[in-house]
Length: 622
Picture 1 (cartoon, rainbow, N blue to C red):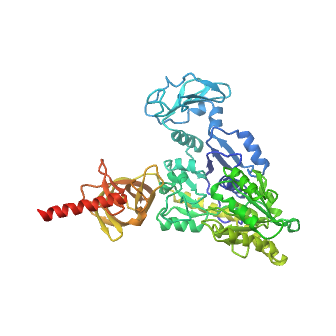
Picture 2 (picture 1 turned 90 degrees about the vertical axis):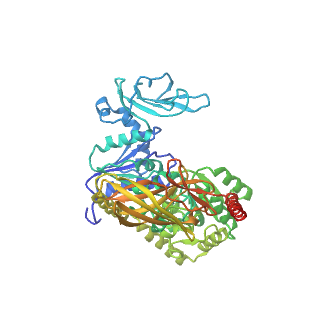
Picture 3 (picture 1 turned 180 degrees about the vertical axis):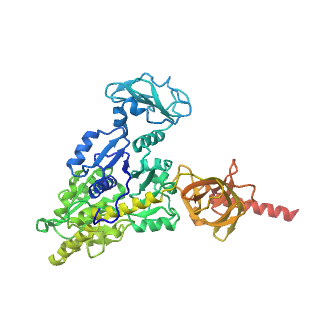
């Protein structure tokens, strides 16, 4: 395509979301914008796949098209609708993965409520879900009491043809989703871009030679990015972040987040930066603006800290300053009470969710962003494109990547309501000439995120990823502890690694630690040295990174990439002597001989010191 640099690769294009909620926010907006932009810029079809059974596909498609969010060449698709409308010939192409298919006990009597019916335990636990076609025939049973009837445990999903016969069976919903993706991509070269944390968490096991998998991280990887970079990871991204190497490409919206993830070895070599795009118009009638009017478009959650925005507006010394807040969420009642308690219901108004709320930026003078953290707020681009001046807390990761302080907006210290108030007053009292120039600068900045700019970045990224895709041959191997010692404030481990098939080279290696089912995870890069039967990997774990594990036990593993494919190997202790405990941690060999780290409390440490003292005194007396 002329004028936009490299073209998209000649493969099928797919996006993946679990669902599209009625009051969707920035993540879904960004996914829809990307699909529409790429389809329009490159004149290509883009299939947007959804997995939720609760979706009226026709109504949602009509809604998104009427709002101008879904392009004509974007095809919205849903797993359950397609299964319900498929004939037996189509269903024959889907592959089950259950080892011992059983069909006789699937059609259990349940009370049907079209299109689904459920069976419950006495405590209200769902034990079975039956899904039906429009004609009343049974489509699928999802049993969750496989081990013992009437008690939750084990799972079996069975798909039925229109003739009532079982077609395929799976032991997890993830296996069903993968089977549908195989059916959709039809073994043809394809790119699959996942924006959903939930759906993306399933894709690290979806390794296909014909599918290049791209996972987009829209928000910070840390649960609290305002703290240490070694902090706990975001719980919603746990499956993605602990398997980051399994994706062909992972994207983040800002260079600062990418740098932080490299600095802590969270990522190694498949992480790239691609900003969100802005797809609306650039402009706005400045003569219609109310100079004293502010606007916020955000989900009402604790992370957004909208009480700060309310308090900042209330504290202004300028008469007539107002703030309209568009959105809904869990903190709505708390905000209503705060507004009532402050007696400012005439100045601060909660407008609720409005799919066209962003059009209000053209008539407001300023917007405020008070989040505790961000990925890269699309609302900042939308406000700046309309000439609405952004005033944002300088938090990780988004605002500073967009706003140039004092030129096209303002950055204020995170959490400082007094500074936020001062910035609002400054914008309102600026002379007309300076304010007009700032509005023009804001529009120019937003134009740098136009679809043709960001679309060209996506085209290059996807083309490079498809060309770099290697045959999927996941390496296997073993890792055995060679030595372990405490060196100052670090734990130094040397691990012997062998990889199969023989002759494979290591691209890189890390030493990782993970609390299963928890958000405590981290890793460090390891140096690689050849040895007779494989490699020695040496890495230093700073003990400060284990400071808050309490009494948790962390599994230690080796993460390696060999000829393009990553794998994780547990470390066998192999009878190697382990160093004594420190004040906070101790190395431990599990019942299966695997290396782990256990946290220690202060009392455990004191007991250990007393025991050592007692043994020393006893030996001296003897």
